[in-house]
Length: 598
Image (tube, rainbow, N blue to C red):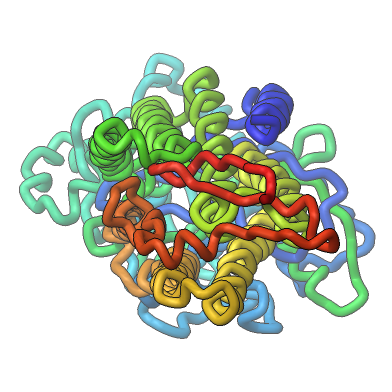
């Protein structure tokens, strides 16, 4: 109980300090004096017509120390090459991904290179693109001012009409025409741009906008446009020939720009959004920079990633299954109440806590799915029940492994040390879990605590194996010394089975299930959670079956022969052994009575 109170206290402190700043799938990342060369902002699985909104509100760079034309700065948006495996990890290549402006494979890759000299953002779309980019295009200020002056002097009455096309500089020195302000008007009129105009980086004319209803019959091309939000900016249908140039603003020394991406039917998949500062990739160079970026990712009708959408229903169904299993276990305890130990009720508490934790987990995902962020009250309840479940799980497994109440009634010193190690590690794992869930993925603390959680979890899983090994050794020694070899060998056999069960459970939930996750298609990665929950249920059921309180359970069988009973009696008449007591056992094996020696 003390462990539960400690976990609850730690959880409450961390949640009060962190949940107020956590926005789940609506991300707000603020970095100050950052020196990493790559920041993984987020990974998200997009279905067709999913949207990605990125708003860079304040980017602070040291303009004097770095030549940004040689060492680019910007964002990369890449799709996984293989199901579940993301490209462009930090260790994959020594070269900065922003420097590779030529396609290396057919997977969609979009680079946003920030040019602080020309005050623009150069966009390179590579691979098989079926995405739509909506952003404020870079315009020629002189021509924009001339058009505005001419319009004010000659045609003041036509100020509400569509603005004339302006010319932008493309990367290859050619001129491409874009319309500077009519995308919102076209969106309201229901018009869709033709593929030719979109590839040229431009907007359809007013006539094309009126005829857009006829072009919308081609659903494959028009659907991304229909799902795009009505935002102020230019619409680009991205492909390898399109090189949009976006506007970059500078306000109080900080650079700002934003864009929205609509995923097409042929480009759905698992995407990774990263920020790159290529100069810091060089050995021994760590130039600080600051960054604030808001990222909002959505799928049609959901704020969850493609692999997370089914999780709310999965968790509530598994909660019902665990609750039913807990009721069956309680019924078994009541039926065989004369053979019940305290640890049996601890196992029942674990099953009910697991079910309650899954209920709150499902509710938490439901609110993230509909609102993009959790409700703090429900999130606190989920974290508390999750912490209780983790503590009860390892304590129960360790007590069963030591043979407490089944083989012996006291714990040895080395077994007590196991609890002194496992319990603080569980508190540390709970702290790491809350920090991971409450912080943004792009922060450096996120990766630190993620590694701590993985390491601590493996240590705890390994630590609970030691009591099982010690119990097996104890039964081996007892089978050859106390004369009850048959019963001890039977217990030894079952403890070996239990050891194999724990090892299989640890390997499957920590290693095999993760390997299956990265080989599955992105929309089926929720099966990882399903496999983990099902394996946990099977492990609980098998453990309960082997340690069930029944008269025919080999763990609870008592010696029936008079010869065995006589071996439990130690009678002495000599003065050297004076004080030795005779031990008698009751029918349920739980009570012991001492009688003075004859």
